[in-house]
Structures are given as C-alpha cells and as structure tokens.
Image 1 (cartoon, helix red, strand yellow):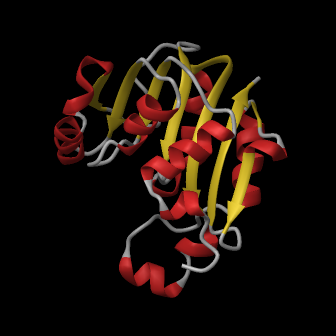
Image 2 (image 1 turned 45 degrees about the horizontal axis):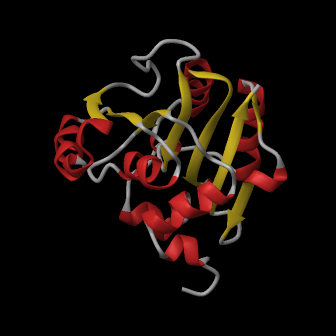
Image 3 (image 1 turned 90 degrees about the horizontal axis):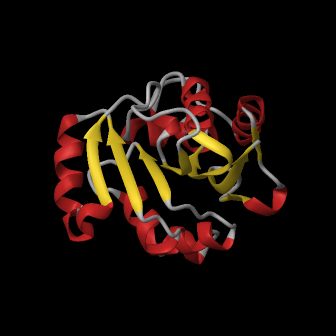
Length: 189
C-alpha cells in the first residue's frame, strides 16, 4: 500500500472526508454513475452536506443494487436510470455533482463534463475521484478490467474541465500514485 494516502485506503469515508477538506459541499446534489454501492450518494449525504441527492446510473442492475444499498438514507436519496451524457435535470439546477470514478468509463468523457457544467448553477461544484490512463492503460490493468480506449491523462482532464467552464485551483486538486488517481473539486464559473 505504499504511496496510497489514508483517504484512498479508507474508502468511501476517507474520500468523503478528503473531498470535504477540499471544500466540496452542496444541498442539491446529482451523483452520476452511482454504481451498485451508491458510493457518491453516500459520500454526498455523509460528508458533503447534501440534503437531496438524485443518483443516476446507466445500468439497470446497478440502479436496483444502489436502491438497496442506499435504503437506509430514506427519502434523502432517489436512484434512477439515466445516461451521463443526457442528465435528466434542468440547467443550473444543482449545487453539487459527485462523480466517483465515472468519467473513465464513458466513451465521450468531454461530453459528460460539459453535461456536468450544464446542470450546475454558477458557483456549484463538481466533486470527483478518477483513474487516469497512467493506470487504466497499464497492461495488467487491461487484463483485469474493461474500459474504453484512449483514456485521459491528468492534464487532459484538467484541460477538459477548464474548457467546459470549471475552475480547478491547485489547492482543490490532488494527484496520487504517480498521477494514476485523482481527487478534486472543480467550481462552475
């Protein structure tokens, strides 16, 4: 585990605490790519001040599993099927978007980043955790998992966020494990 920070090793609680330290917060939240465990929704409620979370995932099996995993959060969280490139919420309607290891899975990640910018109000935040091509394109990793080709580097992601209308100050972005794992908070201009 050398080189991994305590936040990475601690899992959801550590990531939530790390994102909160970087300034992530917001009452109305959209968790994109919630997955089977509903990680982003749980982090939003437990660590980022979210009072109403709409969690979405493209895969029906993930939606059903996330509903079960998040049942203890009651009516603070709803889970539904949706495509990250066409989010079912109005423009400038969200305070916070949580994207926990979502972008490296989607073929057109810049379109999804633009969609994040569309749904966030000015001053709203994108809290993200991501894997980069430095890890995903490693031969051993490709043998273990499937991801689209041509994944982004850390610089690609930061440039894409800026082009979509986000500010990512150095104080709110962390690069770990040789640029393989990123954690940060971007603010919608």
